[in-house]
Length: 320
Image (cartoon, rainbow, N blue to C red; front, side):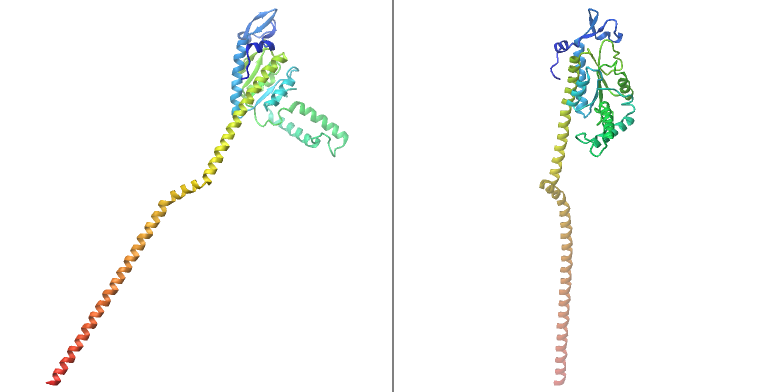
């Protein structure tokens, strides 16, 4: 958190409450005492509550959540817009429309209408190709919608949290957030009822200096959390790219070859066994053929010898 001390709170006037006649009994635990008919808020508790709110906004922003800043009183309007835009969050600073959260589908239709009018107006708001009288009417309607809905045109779902300045004035926004179960961070003066608020920041909600201090702390927490969220996204992208590179790298190919080698060896062994079997069969065939040839030769020799013996017998008979 940005360095905020009790002295900063005191200098901004955060300790000044309302008159003792205008107070809410539920704020008694946050009141330090009274002076000149005005209640004094305990700034030590204010600082603790502000730190707790800072940590919470930091965590939800680190997970990609966004905060809706709400402050329609005159002192807060410009501050709300400035800090919400600085931290890239949503805001409502002119008027809270009934059902802005609970009946958001109807609000979406008005947002679509606003975007259509902006497209017709063009970047220079010159309404090219539109009659002058019609352009005046469209511009009047566009400004009206822009003032009310300009801070939530990119809102697609309910925000991660709502930050409210002066819950007594913004009771409609408070009730809608309660119905939807949206966490509420709000400043509470001595005349406010803090029940139902998740993170109460007791302090003066009428001083512009005090409003600026509280709002800037919440905006800074959102910015810090967003940096953490973006770094997480970058880390995930880097890991994904590295995994893809490893899959495409030669090392990955070698691993695949190594995995395939046992199968290749098995195939080679099978082929070698088949070759040996075929060679063995061929050898057996050759041996059989040689045996046949030997047998035929022996038969031929026997026949020749038998022929010779017969001839000798014939000659002996003739001589006799």
